[in-house]
Length: 136
Image: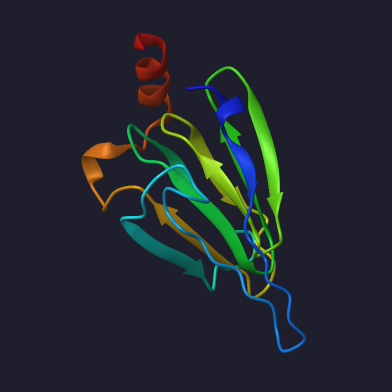
């Protein structure tokens, strides 16, 4: 898979003086059905998260509060994406290495995933990921 398949998705935003509302429908606003939702919070300053790739999993990463960066790597090309709006999500297709860093204070990162957790789906070693990329 190419890094070019990863993109920012603008999510619906209903503006209201009482507060805005954004919603996400799997298979409609994002290109997969949602099987799992998790979020990262209280990430200490200077810490990194991620540092892995998935064989089959699709994800949408959203900065629910604050901001952070996502470094995408497809084995040939790298791109850094800054997330700081709760109505934008970063779609990440399978076989893309990702690292999250530069977390602002009180940031919350929500991840929507196409499958339930399965350790077998992970590449946690970059060299192993690269070997698998070039076998495809």
